[in-house]
Image 1 (cartoon, one colour):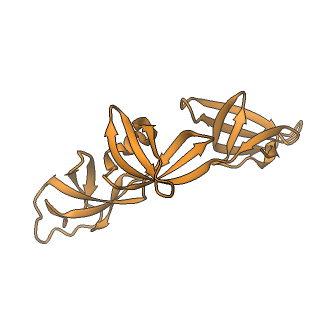
Image 2 (cartoon, rainbow, N blue to C red; image 1 turned 45 degrees about the vertical axis):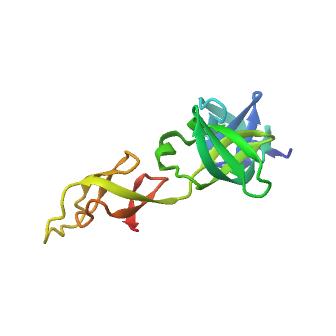
Image 3 (cartoon, rainbow, N blue to C red; image 1 turned 60 degrees about the vertical axis):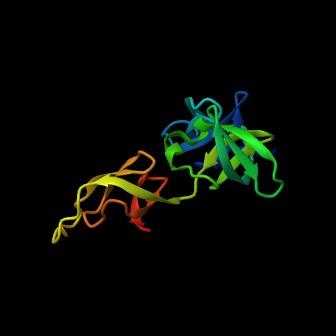
Length: 187
């Protein structure tokens, strides 16, 4: 694996540090008046989610890890485990449902996820950026209500609450951004 200097760390990089796998969340380059410059890096453990703040000088060498990204098709959920299938080899793998976190309700049958693997261990799963959902409960559409930036609450078919524009009614399909968990457009 390639070693990089401490000042080459960028947000999103995955590093092997203190015997664990860490993702760089935030990187600040500090140049104090006295002494050498350093990178103040906020790290998140990919296995247990703990956070760590670490200083890396330019002379420090850290191991950069490349995660293998594979497209996986979601098949079903069984006892808190998501069963997914590799779209190329048709090999089935079980992933913990916690990998998706608060985006778990947006997972739909047959959906393609991007799963990041380190050797054979799944560390992260990403949903498609936009998902179509049906509104099951919202206030009725009021004619002539076109005030800018006025949104009303709506409950989706997966139980998630989002804010939608006033012209969107019940039983309509909408597109939801899974990264921000907000209304994007009508489907």
